[in-house]
Picture 1 (cartoon, rainbow, N blue to C red):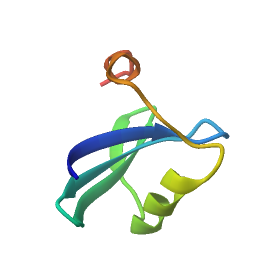
Picture 2: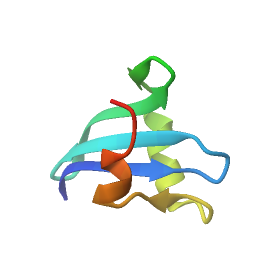
Picture 3: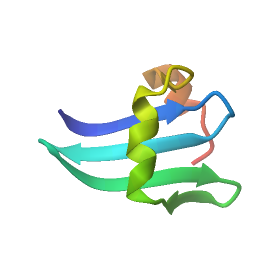
Picture 4: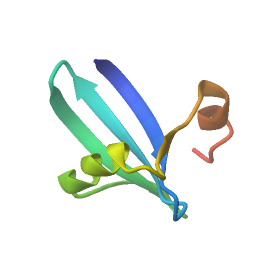
Length: 64
């Protein structure tokens, strides 16, 4: 997988993961001031049962 994917947890946290092949380049969370670097462990939330991957339309609707 290459590129960036954006997710929303069940508690409402929005995070994005940038990936280059099998390596993660960046993990960021969306805060009131924009995207900020996050702890790498957040990547594991992608597989949580209440986390969903956002569609392109949903991502475009997010504040930049």
